[in-house]
Length: 119
Image (cartoon, rainbow, N blue to C red; front, side):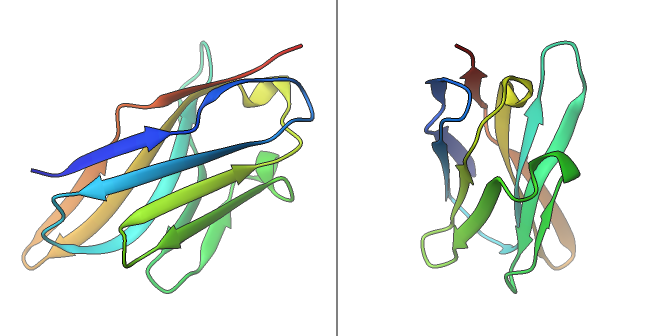
């Protein structure tokens, strides 16, 4: 059974940093894309950053230059380094894994970790 477990969330002051980690276990398919999404209070879930198996990265405009996504393919882990955090970064952050094993496509989510940016 596939499980994604996020860690590293918490309360931080504006301008501070956090590092989120996501560990994927029970993987029986090729992972194509690993990513981070967030749901801010009163808003829909949005993509923050993702990284494909080749290492190509995409970022939401609001986090470019502040957040860095990385992955460890051997350990099936993905990380999100968040610097210069702002109050608008507050929300629940979700890890996502997309993959495939012919003929099936897979799409899994973690339970989420809370990030609160406040003074």
